[in-house]
Amino acid sequence: MAPDNSMSGFDRMVSSMSDDERKDMLNKVSRSSKEENEDVISVLPADDPNFRESLSLRLQQESFLRRLWIKIKAALFNIRQEDIYNTSLITRLAHDVEHTYPGLISHHRSVLTLGTYEKLYMLRKVQEFFMPYVESYESNPGLYYYYLSTVIIPDIAEEIQKDVDPYKFPFTKNLTSETRVQLIKKMEDALDNLPESKRTMMYMCVRSIEWLTAFNRMHVDSLIKNFTPSKECLYNIARSDFASIAKIMNVVNLPANEALVALFSFYYNTTAENPNKGDEEQLVNEFINGAQLHIEEIRSFSAGVPVKDLARIVFDNSLYDSKPFGGGEDWFVKFKSQWRTNFDIRWNQWLFDYKKYRMQIKIKTYFDYDGIPLLPVRPWKKLWTGYTFRYEMSMGFIWMFFDSIIRAHEPVLKTVMLEGDFLIKENTIEFADDFRTIQNMRNDFAAFNASLAENGDIGSVLAGLGHNPERASSSRETFDAVMSDVDESSQNFIEKAGKWFRSVKSILGAVVNGSESQYYGGLSNWSKIGGRQNKEFKENLSLVYTVVDHAYDVLTEAESLDSSAM
Image 1: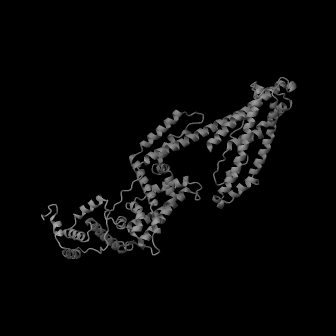
Image 2: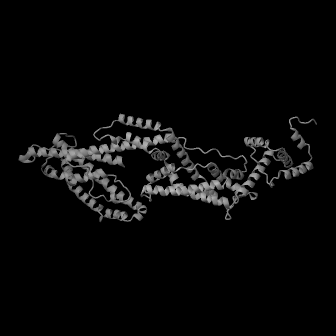
Image 3: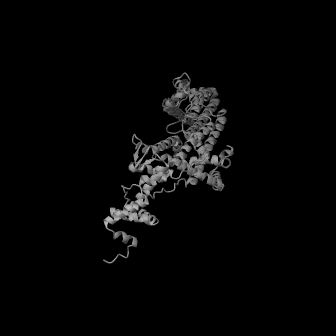
């Protein structure tokens, strides 16, 4: 048979040998190359041509004797050269690891051993320390980036905030939508023109926190659970969990102090019912000290575990290399978006306070009362929760109206009830109900306020919670249940008050202004009621109508403000 010209001289030499000659040559070359025990030969995935091609190219760089040894062994055992070569590389690598990092593996048994277990256990403790902070970050990365800016560029961040703060305008100035657009543009221009060095520094911090987040997602706990009581874990069992560790720990990107300070500040200020509320500066220092100790544990792991080499051994892949870790590339988009969100919150708060200011002006103008009336007893203000009563302004105004404002006008209303001859008889019954409602509301408020007092049914429960801070977090359900009752009572008061105002306005409007309808009519004795003081009576009743109309206007605004504050 003619020789195959496509075969190299090396290949033809091997193929021309008998089996006995191949075995003899294999033994000689094996002793010469000092290869380790390779009784178990790995088989690489047949459907990975790129991997085999890479191995084949690398094999060509080996010495003649090594290539000869692999060629003979492949022919003898009918195994691909790449498989044999990969196994030989893994064996050599494992030998180096066992020599340089003793206690991590026992390669001849294909297991991770006690040293690896202890290193993983240490990593798990680090994950537990950072877990709440990382979870907080993941819930709103953009808000963290904002906090980061207050650490990296505090002066610039403060200047931007002042420049676009709607509160720099007095409440006497009615801000327009055009003003809002101008402020937003000014803010975005300032952010787009941040110094490149500071922007780069922020990005590096973002990358490190993204790395820390990925670090906390590593399957360390799952891998630890796969270790036997003797603290060993087979390679093939460890592979799926070790993949996540190899990817992250191959290149470590530890966060700088600035990134950690921002992380704690973000967590501290956004975590509801944080039991560690106190001196933030002191708590920041304590956190940084703890974080640095745990970061040292990560450094210790990196120094004591050759992650890439270990991954190649565990995965039985001599060419394994994880892709560079990414993350945070879109940070600036989220950063700007968060500034816009913060601006919108500030703008809406200004609008709320502006409307509140206008309502105060109305109350002063209508009723000569300074400020916004509130309930005389508000026990929730003494508690740890920072609770905001949902009906603060509505209930305060209703209480003041029925307790004091309407008192001066009751004689006039009583005269209408007793002497008024309504053209529509149903109005007589309705107005009598309205008059009785005044005293009923007054009595109901007295009972309600008494229940809120410290010795009342509601106040005593809330006072008990406030006097036992140790029970605060566990008493939230009790607090919520009590305040649910307060809210329900408040809704009833507001509903009754609204009904009263609408009824009295309709009845008096028909009498005083002649705004009659099919449901409401005037008085047949309108020109006689009050006797000789008829003119004065009419003026007084007109004043009552104006007071009721103004009060209903204020109540409507108070309800709107309470609703927007929820």
